[in-house]
Image (tube, rainbow, N blue to C red; front, side):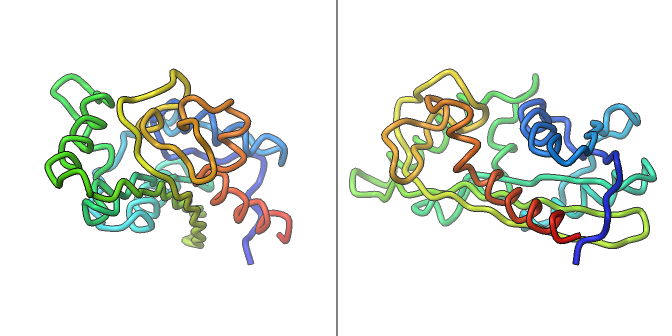
Length: 203
């Protein structure tokens, strides 16, 4: 069973979109979410080959560096026809010499699908794993997934990352076109948080 978190925890992320979503999801529990940057903590190199592995790596680093419970998120886009890529390398596909370019990343995915021919599956899913780590070494992970298909060209101005090309199952709009409240209700991150919330409620 999950242990008590306390009034404050560290968010082991520097992604502003993720930070905003996670802080809003924690607020109803009276938990203040403090970015790792406020403790001067850099982002550790993600060396694991799974979402859970990388999420735990980041949370352990933040918990050790801050002395507070730490929550991290590792998430990504897994494309069926690409053997699950970009997967844990989702952010890497956006890297340039001057930061991340998400249009570049989306274009890479589309180019690879186009190279497979018109019959290539456009099925994909977003995966999110939340890792909660206490300074004493206790750990919990929570996973969420949402299935969908990839659209092209990118659509919508809301959301972040690959949201403009991902159309969740049962919808016609991309994640970047959906009202933020609707996206939060069905997203992979929301599903992982539902499991975290259930654990918090049982604490």
